Image (cartoon, rainbow, N blue to C red; front, side, top):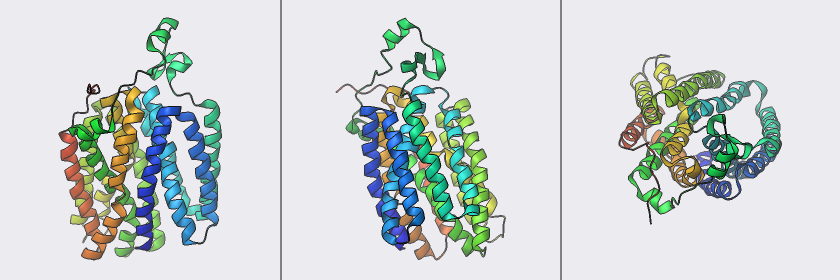
Amino acid sequence: NLVTSVNTVGGFLSVAMTFLIGRWVIARGVRGITAFSCIGTAVGLCILGNGTSLGIYILWSVVSQGLYNGYSFTATNALIANWFPRKKGWVMAASFTSVLFITVYSPKIGFTNVCYVLAAVIAMLGIVSLKWIVDTPEQCGLLPDNMPLTEREQQEFGGGTARQDWTARNLIGSKDGMCYIVGFGLLFIATTGGITAFVPYMLERGYSQVDAVGLMSLTSLFSLAGSFIMGVLDTRLGTKKASLIFAALYVIGYSGAFALTGIDKLFLLPLWLAMASGGANANLMASTLVSQYGRANYASVWSVLFTGASLIRNLCYLLIGAIASLSGTYARVYLFWGIISAFSFVLLAVSNFKYRPAPQN
């Protein structure tokens, strides 16, 4: 319960960092915030790997979540939106794979060594980003999706900075904006909650700690394939259909796992079905915002709507503790994830997902 409370408070504080990082990206571009977030995360990982106190864990819980959102979601997705607005599904799917590989191999090398390996890789990424990252393709004489750009077109496009005035009030006050905040926010809860409750649920089912972690690693392998498949569906079918399929998989998978709780091993199949697609969650929200608000407006819109969805996501840990305590079983936690995913499906189904300009104030 103490760790759950810390994660909840840390999550809410990190949302403020996420919003500020989003504002930084709008004002100064992606390169600087990527380097800052990566190097800051690397330092924190080294401290965490050698930390033995609750205070270190609390501090890392706050800082890491904010910085992670900075380089993994806000900065990376802004780059993808600028460079690959039509191929964003493929690119986002590919960018998620490295996270899953780390999850698969982490139990084999120990927590401290994992922290050191991650710190080295992330710090290297931060240093390289200072040299390699270019915010928009127009700055390299290209159009989005790597199409060549002539000198005349460079003058006409003006660097790709035709940003519109989407205000936080316009976004939050619109039907689509609220549907995206709540709809994707609930799916974020189901994603984070599915991962967080997995090992305790396996222990409750009679599996050993080693077997539970092993099954979690196997789940990560399924997520590798699932994330790529969702990216393909995003590209081929469109973001709305892909998002609805994603939500439907959560409804079927989590509800099915609860329905089959009494059948040993079989209950894992629907659970894996749901969690296999979990890696695509934030990618689908990013793809949705690019589709509806345009690449030039992505960073400003993302900083508002993703912040709102993240506030909802941070209720995850409290919900796990409350549901498990009241019901006496983690099985009902997964049933609840299925229920809120069904509500999310409805919200996304009534959303637009098509480009619309900012309203004239």
